[in-house]
Image 1 (tube, rainbow, N blue to C red):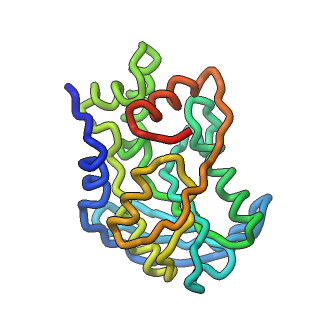
Image 2: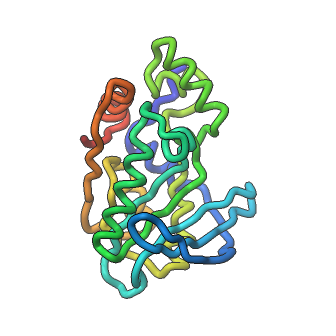
Length: 212
């Protein structure tokens, strides 16, 4: 079953659903690179918890160096070499720390929105020869099911309206612009390829429009 979306349809899907988030709390987050502020939000409709990580004054009206990062337990927490998620997360926090100001939005959308167990099922199909898009489609999912409208309540709460967005994915830029968030610059995140992520990155470029 081919459930691929055209670029415009994918962007519309990524911002189509209304999302409500409730702000919960903030605290300091000391890391090897800087002491950030961690802001917690809860999605009442699903119970999912999302966070924003900030450094410096992000509400001063100037463009904010930012990253929109979707949860990846295997890459972010288990150091998997199958994807570029962990290195992108680390690189983004390092860049924000070097600049002394910025924001990272960590969205609970594991496996491009299909969840952890289904992502592992997709990995099983990839072990058998499918690429990352084919595996999602074989499980009955779209190639990318993420909803970037989750960012909107967090951006509003933090009083951020203009971004310098760290991304290799042009769809994120267009999704932000459809939400009324101005993106004045795309900041590439260059990640080292390895034998385990080579096909994954090539597929993201060929089928999902990522820029490397």
